[in-house]
Image (cartoon, rainbow, N blue to C red; front, top):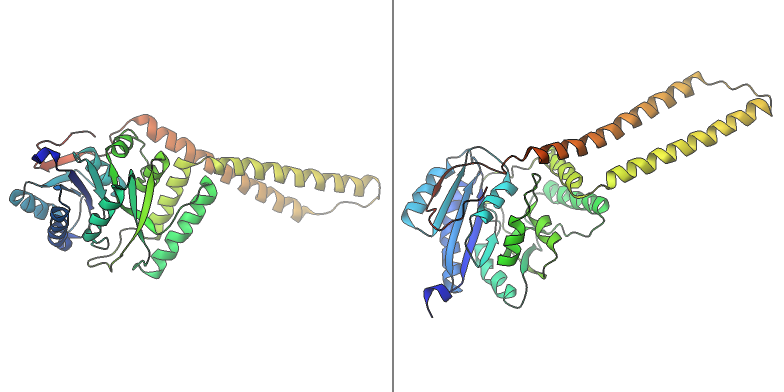
Length: 319
């Protein structure tokens, strides 16, 4: 068997705030892929990590040509970092995983062997999440709200950890929307998908960069970009309020002209005005969010900008 007949596995790792994990991660990924056996391409994407991660990535890649480094010009976010890694991956299979070692590199072997059973995508399901209670509940709430607005069924135990073949990777590369969400994009494609239970470990360094504010923003952006149901609900609620107002107006008309009961209620009139005013502003806000997303898409800006790369020979340069 020639070298080219051995499958190439690209492992894409967005990096932010986990400098001390990178050497161990690289060592464990290398050992795991060597045992498959397969050729390895390990791509670290430095998303402007504040802990000097790029210097370490540069050092590791100078010692091992299988380690590729991509250094962003600024912070573009986790899912754009994943996009950059996939854009520059040359593998027959592409693994996406986080850098904090909560995803065990040893599970790559099981993901790959499950994919060989005839699946295009295999996700790792974190059957015992080791995140903090607030993050677990926030994730559950996010997916419940997301599923309601997008009319789909998601599993909050599934995140980025996955392996995909070239068909899936090529399909993902063709999706250049500004608002990115890797697992949702992959699942949307409809290729043959499987899941396996994987062990989820305690975070070894730092804290998640997703606080409550960022989670709310992510939920809002994802829902707006994936569904127009908020607009439909806004229209339905507007018709409902109009119907209630019409019925109440008929009631007042009957009281005044047929029952000779004067209609008082300056307070109720003011409350109604404020209520309808708030409703109008909220509806305009929802509409404004959609217009803003359309505006961002039409600007056609690149998804990310690369400051420098290491061991870039053989990598595709797409942004």
